[in-house]
Length: 299
Image 1: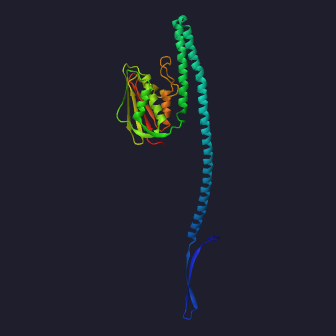
Image 2: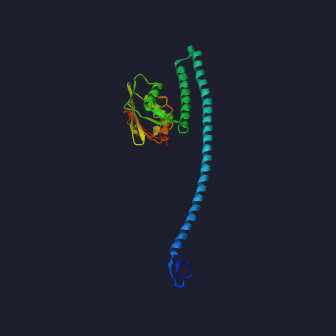
């Protein structure tokens, strides 16, 4: 086409006669316009790609700097939050203990002048104090579940369960059975311990059987372990299965059963923060089975 450049590859070969003079020249010429245009287009694309890579690299460097600043800010905020929670809990629990002690002293000093109603009210007052203290402790535990750093360590789950059961106030009429073999693997021990302790405590607390029983088992899956805790307690109506994992939610009046409504929410938060899921299978009056998965490898 007129006005467009074209490229030709020309090869000239001189023909020399006997006298050593060039008598003629034989040449060939090849149109390489398309090849040159392709080379130019590739060069242009290369320059454009390099520019985009450089631009993207700059953006990533800036994003990384921002991320580091954000991470540092979050770590600082977490430290401040931990300090605030510690101070707040200390300042709240100190007067609560004082109230409990004062009520006990008053009851002792006026022992011969208190009627049954007054004694009942004094006991009720102390139970409210203990409930509030447990609520404060529960809130602290819940707030720290996903923020508290637990260094990975080798955990023998059977030994962990034995320690938990030994420390719990298990009633004499309660039987806790560990079925089969428990795994030993490397994980964050504290959150796993929280999950087991709260599930076992919950089963004990909400049992209405003369002979309580808890069965604990484990199953190895591809990327995780599935732990099962089954009890023969009063069970849970299916319509409340989602509600029980919500913080502060209880299915019984707190005057009937002392509960902060935080235990199962701590379990759910601990499990999900380590890539697992928790489910419940239960019918009212037929016990409950809790299953949760726990990743074999830390992310």
